[in-house]
Length: 196
Image 1 (tube, rainbow, N blue to C red):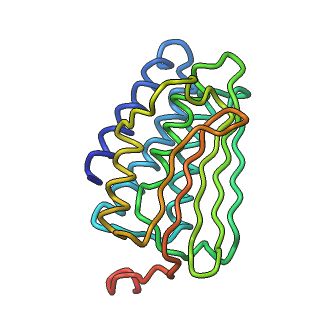
Image 2 (cartoon, rainbow, N blue to C red; image 1 turned 60 degrees about the vertical axis):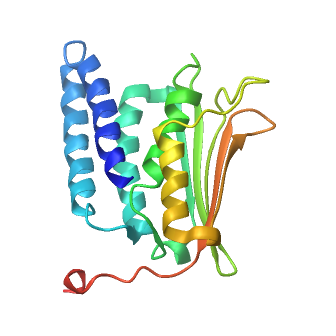
Image 3 (tube, rainbow, N blue to C red; image 1 turned 90 degrees about the vertical axis):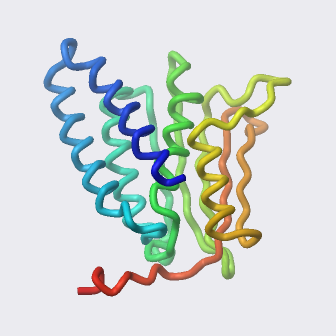
């Protein structure tokens, strides 16, 4: 499941860069630099099922830097993360595909763009993660069809946490889309070779 994500986000990012190579070479160069950082993070966590939330957010920032170059003022991003949850264990590459979905399906099709909010907080013994957008949402009467991003996240969470997790992906009443995740809250325990 995790291996599905790497080519998916890589090809999508390369398509974005390709669109800029001739039109805006300087911006394309900045995006290539950002992509190299993304790949460094992706390859650095390839053997890990879970990483600290702080590291997951660092990778997400690199991805969002690329997207903000692409969308400029059409994409607003807000990240709200409680300090105490930064060392919490989360599946690696969980947030990036969810944010990519929000951009691709909610924000990109709108001429005015939109906003994405990523939040993380602790509620008792649970870690609560949310990705919200104010984009197109789901047209009335249309059924949600899960692609790689949502389907992969759902399957990985089920595999890693069984019944101890919550995953809900649904349209927001005020417009846009919301992905809500609850996981058991526990600190990430580094593997012995990481501790050095």
